[in-house]
Length: 340
Image (cartoon, rainbow, N blue to C red; front, side, top):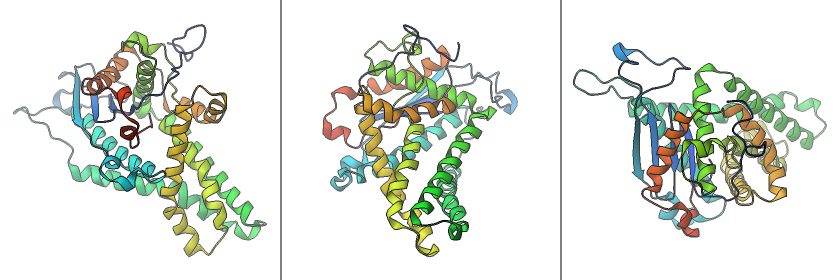
C-alpha cells in the first residue's frame, strides 16, 4: 500500500462527526476507550514463534489469534463533581487515560510471553510498570520543560528582555519535541506500533463515519486523526508559551519550579482546545489550526495492513458490545478521554 493510502476520489476519506471514543496503540494491538468501558485487543504470537523463550523481531508480526480484554470504567470526573470543572477535567481525564494506557501496555506485553509447562505466564510485575511510569513522567518533565528553561537561562544575560527569553525557551522546547518525534519515528522497534497507531485512527474514523466496521472499510480512511495524542502534545508546547510568558524571568529557584507547577494548567487548556477542534473538525478555522498537528502524525503513524485493522476493530467492538458511545449524555462525555 502506498503512502497515499486507500483513497476515494484521490484523497483519503475523512470522517465528519466526532464520537466519544479514544485509544492508543500497544504492543501488537490497540486499546479503545468508550464512556463506560475500555478494551484492549492484542494479536498473540503462535506457540512456534515464541518457542524456547524466543522473542519476536521488531518487524515481525504476531500470527496467532486475537485476545481481547475488556474492563468497566467509571471516570474519576463522574465520581467527583469538582473534577468536572473546565481545565480541571482535562487534567483528571489525562491522568486517568495515562493509568489505563499503561495497564493496556502491560496486558499487551504479557500476551507476547510464552506459557510455561503448567500453562502459566511469567507476567511483568506491577512494580516494573510503576517504575516505568514514574521514570517516563520524570523524563518527559525534564526533557520538555526543565531542559529548555535551563538552556535558555544560560543565555539569559545575552537576551534583551523577558519576552525574548520566553520566546527562545519555547523555540528550544518545540525544537526538542520535533527532534524527539523524528528520532523515535526512525526507530525500527516502534514501526509496528506506529502501524497499529494508524489502525486505531482509521477504525475510529470508520466508526465516526457510520460505516460497518470491517478492515476494508476502515482502510479507506486517513491514518491521521484530529484528536491524536501527537497533535495534543504540540498544542501543549504552544499553550506553554502563553501560560509561562507572564512570569517573565524570575530567579532560578522560582523559574524552574514554575515550569513544573504550571504543567497541569497547560495540559488542562490543551485538553479543552483539542476537544474543541475535534468537535468542529468540519469548520475551516479548526482545520487550519489542526493542520500542523495533523502533519506531525505522519511521524507517529504508519499505514496498517488488514490484519492490524482487524485487531483495532476487535477492541472497538468489545466496547460497542457494552455501550453506545454516541448515545452518551453530555454529562457522561465531560470526563471522556478525547485523545485518539
